[in-house]
Amino acid sequence: MPDNYRRVDLLAKGRESELWPALREGVRILLLEESADGNDRTALLRYEPGATVPEHLHRGRETIYVLEGSQEDHTGVHTAGTWLSNPPGTRHSIRSPEGCLVLIHWSRPVEFL
Image 1 (cartoon, rainbow, N blue to C red):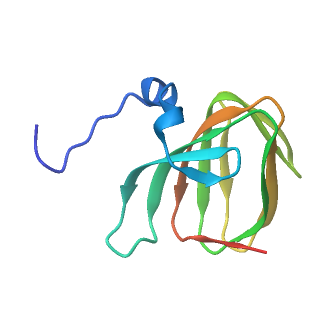
Image 2 (image 1 turned 90 degrees about the horizontal axis):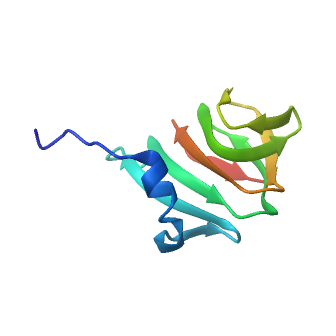
């Protein structure tokens, strides 16, 4: 396998989430890939039931694929199998009453408000 090739079983990694660092209270992160400048990032996020992320501004595009459970924002409830794309300049907060596992990509870091 070439050095720059990576393969990750996302659902298997999701079951190991207690070993991941905390991103916020109730939200853990497993960084899968990051650009040299730190702007472009892909990660798994595991939300514990009841976890929230406060309102934040997207300075770049954010894409999310919900793998397990569900998360909610001002646009509705997003269940497993949902793909979301938040363009630059949008803002929202997130909550996950039941908990969830998401694959997320940021083209630039978010700014918490």
